[in-house]
Amino acid sequence: MRQQIEEWPRIFSHEMGWGKDVGRELIPLVDESKRSMTSVGDEESFERSKKFTFSIHTHPPNFPIKKRGGAIPSKTDVFSFLKRVEASPGKRKIDIIVSVNRSGEVLGYTFLEIKKGKEVQEVRKELAKRLSSRPFIIYTFHKGGSGFVVPPLTKNRRLIKAYFDALNESGIKLKHIAMPGYRFDRKNGKFKRKNLARKAVDSLKMKRRKKK
Image (cartoon, rainbow, N blue to C red; front, side, top):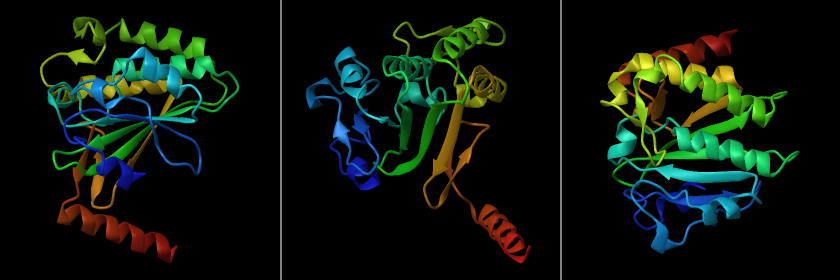
């Protein structure tokens, strides 16, 4: 999957979306003429995504994404995911956000899934309630739904934490998988390159686990 993503034209600057089933290759959901730097979420691509287990789209390092951290799903990402789950009751649905850097390299994947025992309507209602209360009530959302319109969200760690908490407590499960050499920074909502000090700590932890 990673190779197919990284070899896609203009992957470093324009969003792209695919559908995927277990053990299968990525199937494009978006025509090349409809790709943009900020969104691939039109109704046609959404309809195509319904038949797949996985719906995948990239977050290139453009301006809107930088405001909230590339590995954080936008409000639109989340509610589109809920709509997709609702369209196929009884079938497992997972959305994947791919963080890509300016060189077109995949840094990591963010998986969205509804927690077991939770119903879509319940999750949607609870999440809408939380996002219309503090601390979110003092901010506005982009009219097109692409995310928060605030000063750089990566500098507002309190808001990032509150957003993660709102998703989790509403019944949405997030899982972050970093590529080798990178790690997920929950405070900033980004995949970042590991530094040597952190590598040493991770290596030490691994050795301790093996001894147990």
